[in-house]
Image: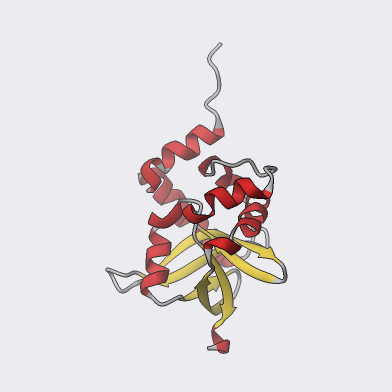
Length: 162
């Protein structure tokens, strides 16, 4: 009997080289639409809308909003080269969170030294991200510290605070 295709392997295949393939792009568009409505999605599933650095048009990405220490964070499961990370940096952190309503936000990248506890919490909340991390969600904090430099983390702040 053939062995089933493991879910983690499918996720890695869809994001080979840290970039979404055609199937992943279609699924991401559908997920962003679903997350933006706030219906049929957990509270921490959001769509991030940011101006494209090349197109100048708003682009939406489905992400998991992570809470830790009374703050909200967004984590890049694909690391530094994720399109949304590059767009957020080019937009100086200005973006919109969508989950039933629009929230204007400023995303502030946090230092590598502060990322490990947020990454640990993120892996608990985002099962779809686990195949992309070389650390188990139950690993001790030093394991997260070891990989923290590879995964950008942004604190979500109200744009009204600017």
